[in-house]
Image (cartoon, rainbow, N blue to C red; front, top):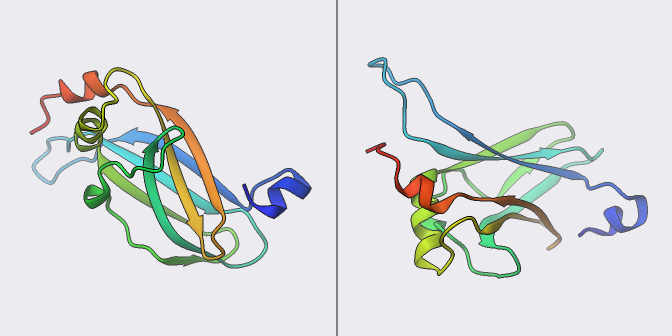
Length: 134
């Protein structure tokens, strides 16, 4: 948690996590994605140095090579950026790391000053692995 969050009670970065799919040109729907958002709710520019998805309380990064979106990235006040990973890829990585079922995961963002921001969520590994989205 950042110094500002500790002193003033709110984080300069707002993190989110959602599931989504896209319409494809042929009329079909894309596979299911986990979409992560980072919004700069601060008054100044913030650098996003790195991101990762980890099991809660662990430092391991799941589906690291599968995450779409570039870091580092600078966000002016009010700007946002999103990152995404296939739900099935993240589910496979969680299962392979010993977290089947409905584990608690965290989307972790590290800013340019080394401060970490976390957004926890429950992920339904077994259900996403059963998807027929290939």
